[in-house]
Amino acid sequence: MNTLINTKMTRSNSCNRSNIDWLGNAFQALFFCSAMIGVLSVATIGWFLFKEGLPAFMEAGVVELVFGREWLPPALYGIFPMIAATLISTLGALIIGVPIALLTAIFLAEIAPKWLANIIRPAVELLAGIPSVVYGFFGLVVIVPAIETFFNIPAGNTLLAGIIVLAIMILPTIITISETSLRALPTTYKEGALALGASQVYSIIKVLVPAAKSGILTGVVLGIARALGETMAIIMVMGNAPAMPGSLLEPARTLTANIAMEMSYATGIHASSLYATGIVLLIFIVILNSALLYINNKRVS
Image (cartoon, rainbow, N blue to C red; front, side):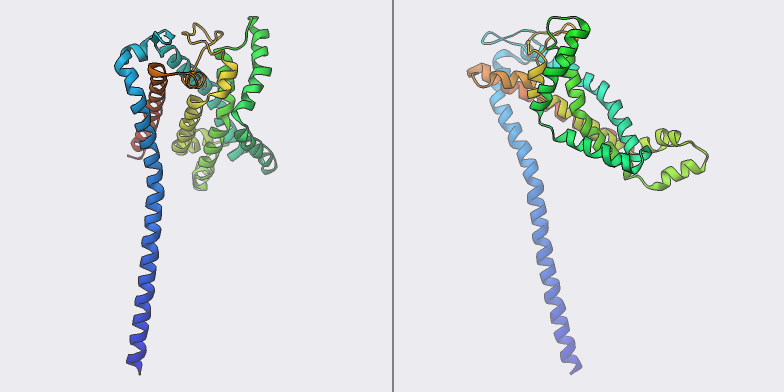
């Protein structure tokens, strides 16, 4: 009798183990397929851009296209002024936005009382949900006239207006990720620093921020990607002149604005040049991600 019961229990355990293995394998396959969707999406987008943009590089030449200073289709296709405007506007947005975002994240995570943090945090999250066109309207109605009045210039649609708008737009991304990174740190970090006699500010600057550097850098890189890829708001406030900006108070055109403004009517080599502009943007994003991975791996090692 006992032998019969043991045999049945063994068969039952075997069946259960078989069902668990089958279910686990099914979920592993589902997870793998989900991960591959992202990889295939990136590969497909890259293949499409290079397929459409390579004719422009072959006909106009890589050097002439990337470093040419005049954009005048169908004769001239130099995108260097747009590259310069994109990099300057992104760098300017980082110079303004990153310190504000980091200080706000530190305030929310370590200094602000709970009731005040519960007011500021939803406001920051709401800022992330505002559409780009609304930022553009705000810049057009508020920032552009303010620049005209303050600098006494005829038109405020300038590179500076684009920088200010981008700085505002990248704030929620950097604030949210930086605050999350700071809150994820073990409490022993701060407690240990305070126990050794360090002040709260010293503990935050010398202990917590370096410990959360990986997450903060991730937020900054995502903010850079947001600034590089922004289109609508930039079109509305920057003036869109396809010429090399001589100062921050002159109009300029970014790479994304160039694509959005001319793709609807471009044909032939003109359209291919716009796809080549997308390739340049994609290369910028790849460089940013590679730099972030290198910094994180170096920190871990």
